[in-house]
Image (cartoon, rainbow, N blue to C red; front, top):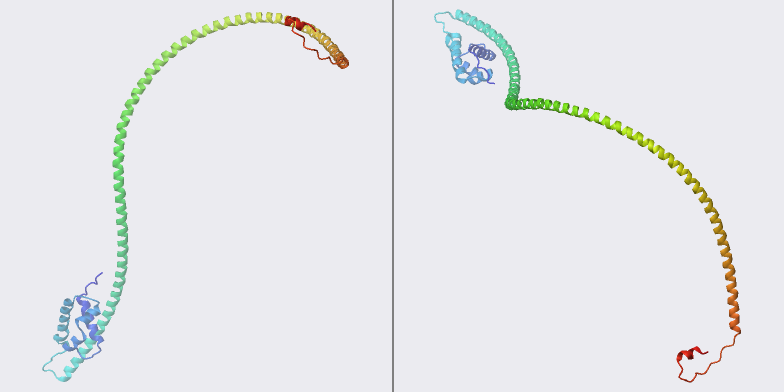
Length: 312
């Protein structure tokens, strides 16, 4: 931040303070005034300011302090003692004024320090306000973005709602048609159910009649089967008796067969022993017979061969 421009009173007080701090008891002359106070020194003392403004104000103060007769007072037709007394009085007045200027300077410095503190605090507050303003702007930007997105979403939702409203109208029409078809179907179903119920009752009566006939037939068949079962039981008892008789005959036949088999085995053994004895006798007889002599070949007599072969 730029430093605020000093007022004429602040410049006047600063110039008088600089003259007092110079420590010269004699009233300032123009040369001494320019040596003690200059635009550069005044600007450095004030901490800044426009050089042209400071120069104009400094010229005015110089004219007031020097040219108005505060430094070079010409008192004609006065005795030197009175002039000296008036000079001393003027110096005392200047000293009092300079003390007042120093006090005013201190107050001004205190006020300046307070102002500096207030300014620093104000600068901090301004900085905080700037940060808050930046954050607020960012929040506003975020809110604007969210608002734009919400508006876009709202537009999409409105379009979708309109589409759903149109779809709902179509569905309501389809529902009305479906309800009408359902009502017609219910009437048709009720008629079909009534027809089926009547047919079912007729079939039920027919089924009951057929069941009664079948029950009578089953009972008659059961009685017949009971009679056949009794006949079969008697027949089975007779067959059991025949089987017992046949088993007994078979057992006796098996015993006789086993006996015949034993006798046949004994006969086979006897026959085998007799055959063995016969074979031994034949071998002994053959061993006892001499071998036959070799006969001459008979002469041909013109007889048939069959007859020759018949002779020994």
